[in-house]
Image 1 (spheres, one colour):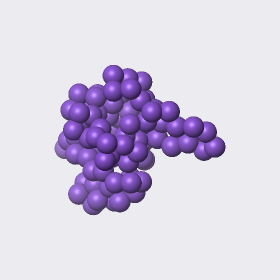
Image 2 (cartoon, rainbow, N blue to C red; image 1 turned 135 degrees about the vertical axis):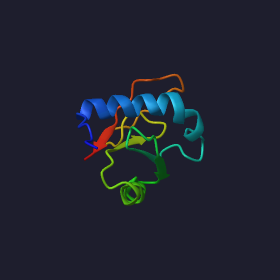
Image 3 (cartoon, one colour; image 1 turned 30 degrees about the vertical axis):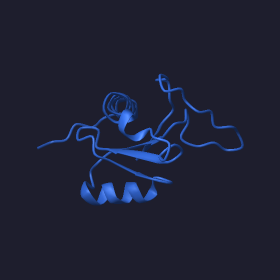
Image 4 (spheres, rainbow, N blue to C red; image 1 turned 90 degrees about the vertical axis):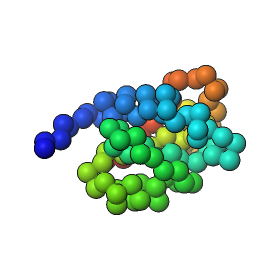
Length: 102
């Protein structure tokens, strides 16, 4: 069965929908704020959480090597910051920056 190739934008849009509709209420807890959530294969919605996202990405790729992974920094508007300030999100905020792990 041929797998449809998704653009980075499509992966990001699907990941954002999954996070906002299905995962945010479960994972955005005080103990998880600042950790990385990895959404794997936007068609399955599988995810894992760890401090940096690296171990989660490895675990999820081991399960599904063809998966397109997408990382979200829990509770913040950006995935990472280089020399800047990371702004926290409001619980009702839907505008977030995420990054695709290709």
